[in-house]
Every structure is written in C-alpha cells, then in structure tokens.
Amino acid sequence: MNNKSLPLIYVALDFETAEEANRLTEQLDAKLVGLKVGKELFTAAGPELVKNWVEHGFSVFLDLKFHDIPNTVAQAVVQAARLGVDVVNVHASGGRKMMATAKQALEKESHQPLLIAVTVLTSMTDEDLTEIGVHRNAQEQVMALAKLTQSAGLDGVVCSAQEAEILKSTLGESFKLMTPGIRPKGSQQDDQKRVMTPQQAQQAGVDFMVIGRPITKASDPAQAVSDIIASLSR
Ligand code: C5P
Image (cartoon, rainbow, N blue to C red):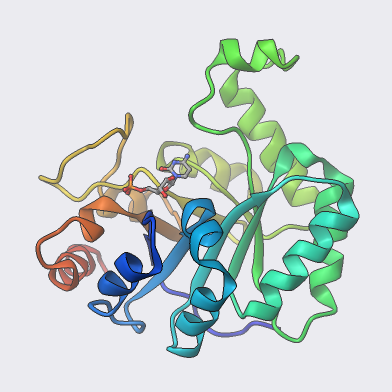
C-alpha cells in the first residue's frame, strides 16, 4: 500500500526532451513538489526518465490518460505502478469495467499509485459532446463520470478548481481532486481560460494542484515554488 504523503503541487513537465526536463528538475526540491509527466515527454524520453526521478525521491504523476479495453488498461497501470509513480490516470469514459479492472489489478501490486480519472477534457464544448453522442452538457457529464469513477472504486478525478467544491460536497472529502488551471496572482494566464490562484484552489478543497508554466518558465523556478507554498495556509 502507498502510505507516503504526497506533495500538494505537481509541476507539469511539458518538455520535448529529457535534457530540457532535467534542467528544470535539477532546480526543484523533491520534498516540496512532485512531477507530472505527460504524453509528449513520456513518448520522447520513456520510462527510464521517470524511474530516475523516482529514484531521486520525486513523487511522479504519470498523466497518460489510458483508454482501452479493460485488460490492456489494467496491464498499463500495473506497469506504471512498477515504475514507482504515485499517481496514474485513465479516461472515465472507458467505463466502469475498464476502471474497476485497472483498480483491482493495482491492488495486487506492492506499490499502489492513486488511480484517478479524467472526466471531460476541458477542450470539449457542449457541441463537441453532442457530436460524439453525449447529450448531457459538459458540467452534467463531468458530474456523471465523477460519480461513475467513484463507484468503480477509483481514488479521484482530474477536475477544474471551479468544480472542486461541488465535487467534494457530492462525492465526499476522501475523493481526491487533482486540478490544473492554477495561476498565482500576477502570473500570465497563457492559454488557460478559467483559472484560480493556489490559495483559491486550496480553499475550494483540491488535494493536488498541477502547475506548469508559472514554475517552468519562471526565471527562478525554485523561488516560484517557494512563493506559491508561502502563499498557502498550512
Ligand atoms: O502550464 P500550465 O500550468 O497551464 O500546465 C497545466 C498542465 O495541466 C498541462 O500539462 C496541461 O496539459 C494539463 N491540463 C490542463 N487542463 C486540463 C487537463 C490537463 O491544463 N483540463
């Protein structure tokens, strides 16, 4: 079982190469932040990079959003567990059987990452959903898939901080929320549409924050992390 306490902040490593990513992680303290590795970096640099960070004490969120038949997804999350990552995710739209099979497979592993799900991609509009045969609006679909995720036995969902309060009140405190779209006061919004500051996200009850560019593009990334942590209440 994974009993270690996980960091509040996961730094999104949206880089093309291992070298660029390592230049950043060398400036970060594994006691203060975790690392989020997504499809771009993982496809470019592979599992060795992740294993190396785990060996250096970093908590890693492997953000590969698996979506396939239950057996394939279960085998994939087991491999993620064996890399030593602490959080891994799947698409809730893969369905109950896919999610439950993945969770059950992880329960047999000695190191068990949190298994969370993506509900509706924030890039999707209500019209996009209609086009793929989903006739609920995005907000209703987020809630329906979050409930399905919980009933399939998963640990939580990726969601926007705006949805955090309603998700916590509906699904309970122990259901984990991982939220991107976080911008410290005064930082650039980039392409994020609806943002919250770290303090607001903390007040809304999120368990983990994914923060990318405000840290990765800062002139002093370690200082950016300290400033964010200092802005939070303990
Ligand atoms: O740089 P920034 O803080 O915007 O990075 C946010 C990270 O979270 C990126 O890796 C982005 O792909 C991811 N993400 C997001 N919105 C979602 C899901 C994931 O911004 N709804």
